[in-house]
Image (tube, rainbow, N blue to C red):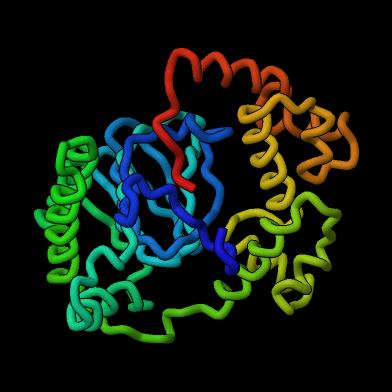
Amino acid sequence: MRSDKSEILPYKFKDYYAFIGLEKLSDHPSFRMFNHWHDAVEIIVPIRGHMVYSINGELVHLDENNGVFINSNQIHYGFSADNTDCEFVFALWHPLILCATNSIEKNYVKPITDNAAIPYIRLNREIDWEKTIMDDACELNAQLYAPSAPLALQSLIFKMWKTIFDNTAHEEDDSSHVSPQLSILKDMLSYVHEHYPEKISLNDIANAGKISISSCNTIYKKYLKESPIKHLLNYRLMKSCELLIENALSVTEIAFDVGFANTSYYIDTFKKRYGCTPNEYRKRNKLSEIFTPNPGSIL
C-alpha cells in the first residue's frame, strides 16, 4: 500500500504498468473481495456466472452480458450475493501507460480519470461500443503471453481508451459528483487497514475520519453496507486467511497477529464467516493449490 493506503498492484511487466488475468470469486474467502482503491483504471468482464460489484456504495450486477469499467481511485469490490462462483477477466492499467505526450495526458487521459461524473461505466454486450470494450479486455488476457505482449497490450489499451473517450467526452466534469464522505471513508479505511492488528475501538475509527461515531456508522453502512466494527472484524478474518495459506504459523499465532485477543473467539468467528475452522480452511486451500494453481488475485 502507498502512504494513502491505495493499493500497489502486482504489475506483470517491469516498467509496464498493466495487471491482466483470469480469476474466480472462489479465489477469495466467502466469494468476496475486500474493498480497495488504486490509481489504475479497471475493467471486469464475467465469462461464467454472475456477481455484484460495489463502486462507491453503488451495486452493479454483472454477468456474461454485462461488464464494468471502474475509473481511477474509486472504492470498489466484487462479491457473490448467492454464494455461487463467477469466473471473470480483469484488466487494470495505470493511466501513465496512455500518456505518450503531455498533450495526450491533458486532452485525452485526465478528462476521463479526473472526471467526477464518471466513477464507472456499465458495459453491455447489446451496445456495440461497450461490447467492443469487453471483447478487447478478453483479448488483452489472450495476448498476455505473446512474445511481444507489451506491444500487443499497448495497442489494445490505446484502442480501448479511444473507444471510451469517444463515447464519454460529453460527460461534463462536475465537482458536485464528488462526495466528501468518500474522502472521509478512505481515511477511516486507511486507519483500519494499517492498525487492524492493534486494539481498535469505534471511537478510534471515527477519529481517523474526524467525524462523530454516529456519522462514522452512517458512512460505513451507506458505502460498504456494514458497520465499522463488522468491517474491522471481516478485514481481520480476511488477513488471517492470507496467513493460513502463506505460512506455517499456528492458529493461535495468527489470531493474535491479526488482532484477536482470544483464540477461541477467533475460531468461532472464522467458522461462522466461512463455514469451516481455520485449520480446515488451511488444509482445503493447500490441497487446491497442489491441483489448481491460483491464477492471481486482484488486490
